[in-house]
Length: 208
Image 1 (cartoon, rainbow, N blue to C red):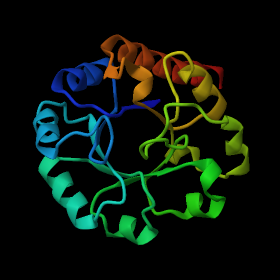
Image 2: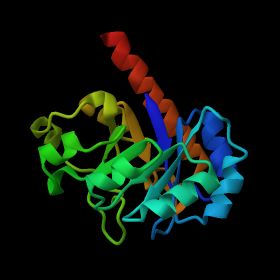
Image 3: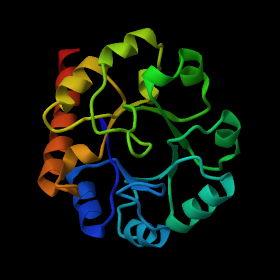
């Protein structure tokens, strides 16, 4: 089970998350309480292990700016979290993660979008990028999504990640506010989240 820790804003948390087993580290370059300047993300990325994939989160940004930031920071993936049309994804020189909210889109749009991963999130509130609340996982029954491309997000925490994985069976899980305390990343919550996510995956495959 792949795990993405998103909304990282400092080096210590990034390194601790990587050491705990995170497969993806996400940096937000769009309006958000967790927004980070590209130069600061660049400094963090230089300290991260090569095997940990670095993801930049953008919302309706120009292709030119996304390329500039991706090259500066050293990103491995570009995550599109706005209303980006398919031609934007096709122009990107980087692997794409496209975020969708199932309640606000249709199956054809989700299943035909040109991307490497589909990130399914809960609807945002003040900012695009999720509300930190779970959504009805039964919605997946209405969509024929390739689970090998599926990243599940939206209100996940160390308390529900195992149930989420066992119910939806995604390729990866994504968390941000669910591993925070008072709006700041909590190292112990990150460690527990990763441990439980990986354990759920092991248990799931053992049963099979």
